[in-house]
Image 1 (tube, rainbow, N blue to C red):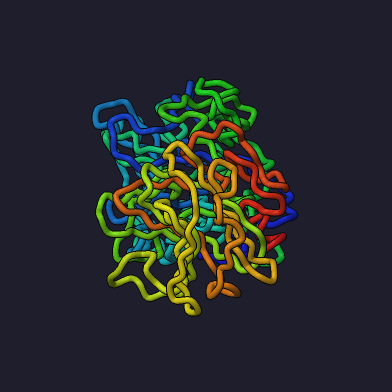
Image 2: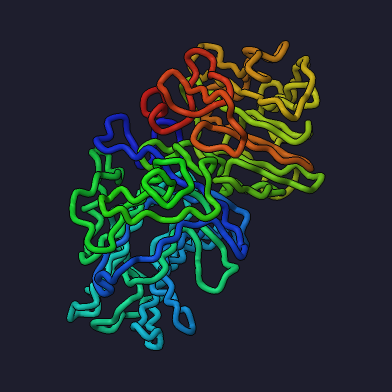
Length: 483
């Protein structure tokens, strides 16, 4: 969790901007969403570098594991994967597993190199930059592979060395896959967001070629300006088409035109939540007595039980004016704000604590705070599942308030409600759900269908309705300015 003003991997004055990412749910199917390409010829199978950015997004897979996959498949008997990253970072057990398989041309000489990092990576609020670099021609075993996370070379609790001159099917004339484990389907796919994928054929590079520390010590992207080699590529996910060409989501922008086929992805999976403008999402690290299932890049919550399951956001707010939207399947949901320091993990409904203010779609605004204890405001509106509800939070005015909207119009008696005992605290967007599904839109990605594509006054966020004047999307660019 990060408080307002701390923009993970971003700042106002970024010299290099990443515009888009791709979002995917971690699902185990025989045809998971992915990007595929078969090289027409062989590149360097001993020396190469892979760089990409990843943000954890879902809690739907077993143990909350978040996966990323980059792999190649030999077509001979056995179909051994040439390179495979399994980025396993559960909610509570927190190590990253980095696995690579190298195999010779006949796919009979397979070398597994399984490593686990000493460091822990479980933060859902941040983008992680991961670099995997290989050169098996090196005489020293320790120099044949390296892994960097946010600019720091990793040490491992478990490490298996690669033999000298061992080859991989990565960069071979075989199937390459991004976003799913192609071998022996069904297998889980990417869970969360991925951005700026580079494959550098023929060079073992460190992280400084792709990123740099700013004056605050935050690791930020920088543009790679070197060569890509024979089978190198760069995926920026900037286009919206589904073809294997320069207009597709899997377009190669390195200049090599090694475009990837788009399988299962559409323009709806494209996001503006990126390492240079990090948007708010739900955070499964907030623990409640009942936890919802989170999918769609941690923007969708589902609870099939009669208990109230809670979801709280990645970013805390102490200043500024902020806007977000949501839709629900029925009226059994409460959406608003909550503070951080409540003891609600053992029992009880997620909203039933002192320091919460929410709109109950059954027809009232409920407030639980240390001053009023329980103070409800009756509001007037007719619930409609097709409608978009909006929340505008004013943390700047002398009287801090919250306002609730339905399809762009202020709900009767729902405007400028004093947040009372929650004032002058750090508050987080909050949702509680009971036998219901809620899809939120903080502006960076949503599974809600958007027809109007309105942004805030700074041009950030994609909303169904324009935020009220002076209110902004909760993203790191705006937080750096107003938070």
